[in-house]
Length: 276
Image 1 (tube, one colour):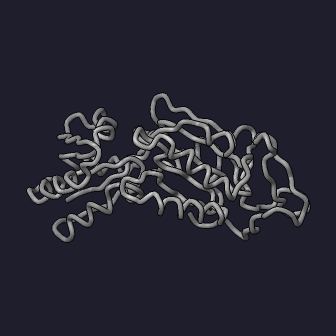
Image 2: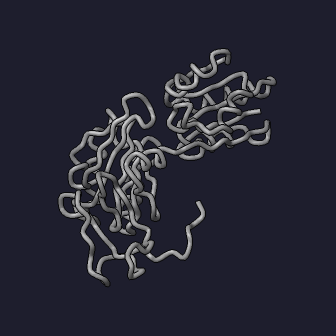
Image 3: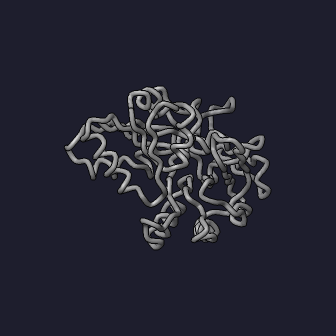
C-alpha cells in the first residue's frame, strides 16, 4: 500500500487530519529531504528515506519496491501531491501493481492567498515558472493567455540560481495586459519559521528578487488593496442600492477607488455561493 500524501505548508497545524492518520499507518516514509525534515519530529519511530531533488522517478520506484515487499509506504509532497507533486508520477510507475491512495493537502496557492488576504475570489490560474520540465515558450503562451483573460495569477517557482531573472521576465509579459498599479504580493516560507510576505503592485513586484521558496500572486481587474490586504471582488452587493460597484486600487496600490456605474469590468452578481 502506498499513500501519496500532501503535507500542506509543512507545520502539523496545517496538515489535514487525514494526512496525519495516513502517515501514522506507514512504516516507511519517503520524500525530498526538506519535506522529510518537516515530518521527522512528528514520527521519530518511522523509517525515513530522504532523497534529493531530480530523483523523483527513483523515489517512486523505491516506494513501489517497498510496497511490493509488504511495507505500508508514505510518499510525501509539500502542498497537494496532485499539484506539481508526486501523485501523477507514482500512478504512472505503479500501474495496477499495488493499491495507491492520494491524500490531498493545502496548496501553496491557498496558503499564500490566506496570508495576502483574499485574492483568489474569482477565477485564477496557477502557473509554474520552472522550465525544467516545461519549455519556456509554452510558459510564455500560458502567461500571456491567462493575463489577457483577466485571471488572477498565482506563480510557483518564480526564480532560481539557474534562472535568476525568470520572475522579472514573467511580470513583463503580464504587464502587456495589466497596468503596473495592479495589486500583487508574495509570500516566502509559507507556514514555516521565518515566514515573510509583502503586498505591493505589479510594477513594484517586478523588481523583487524572489526564489524557489516564494509564491507570488498577481491580481486581476477586480483586485484591490484594502487595509494592506489583497481582495478580489466577487460582485456581492455591498451598498443599500443592492448593486455591486467595480473597484480598483489607485496608482499607489493602497486606496480603493470606486468606478462609476457602467464602467470597468464588474464581476457577475452571483445568486449564491459557488461550491468549493
